[in-house]
Image 1 (spheres, rainbow, N blue to C red):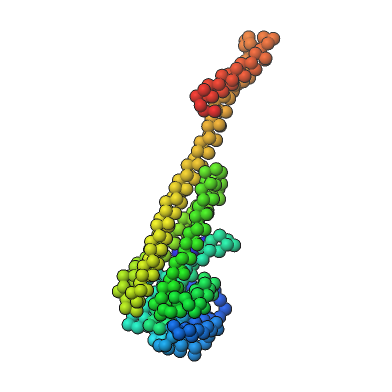
Image 2 (image 1 turned 120 degrees about the vertical axis):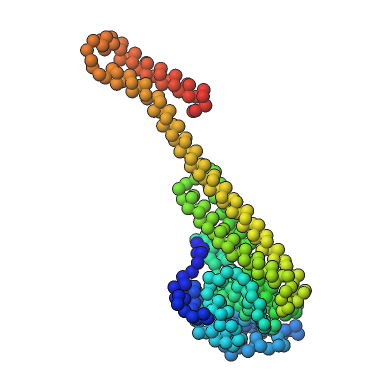
Length: 355
């Protein structure tokens, strides 16, 4: 289940720029992965780099992607920030994983924060992770809370010497990272769509008590996705307008494609919200109809037994001078009367369409 916010108790009373990690520790040790390449065919990848290897990011002859996995070691992140002369408030925002997706432009780099969504098969839920991206002239820094394989296809593309990634700069690399994260939203939407289809069949055919819990869970997840996607639209839209000089005009064409994907995701989320609201109404109607059917059956039974109860109570008084009590066929006649009344009532209910 997605959480709407994370605990900020450790940040209360701290000065602006105080480095406090707001989030859950996902890996044991902070890891640095570096991919360094240029248009001439040079390519080098370091899976467990050190702080000293960050100097590659300041090399104007190559394009460098530095991916930092794990944010729990605040001093380590602070050292990276000092190495690249990052503003203290920006480093604070990197460690605060409850940030709203946005885009900020500085003198020498661009800061972009967005949410990466991953589907957990074991419990059929969505896991959220914040990704912070710093885009410089010759480098891209990406900070993620854990270490996942979502960027593996991108690394494989970088291994292709003839690919566009190897022949473009840091702006196109940043676009590729954004595109990978945004495309992963479509996988989440596919999973939600399958859940909605199964839930729709369940609501219509046989709604159970846990159906309402499932509806509420899906509703919350869709609301949270909407919460992340709307500001992402604003950030990517600002980038696609070409107001930032670090992005080449040829790259902006691809960025606009990412913007269109975000719009498509928003449309899908809005559709899912309408579907889930409709499912909630159908569920409540189904439960109400089921209750009405039960009450109708009980009412019919009670209506049939009202005259029968009257007859049995009347002849159960044992008062003197009741001539019917002395008739030899009084008992079978009473049963015939009871069955006759029941049959007439059942026939009447059937003709009225109540049965």
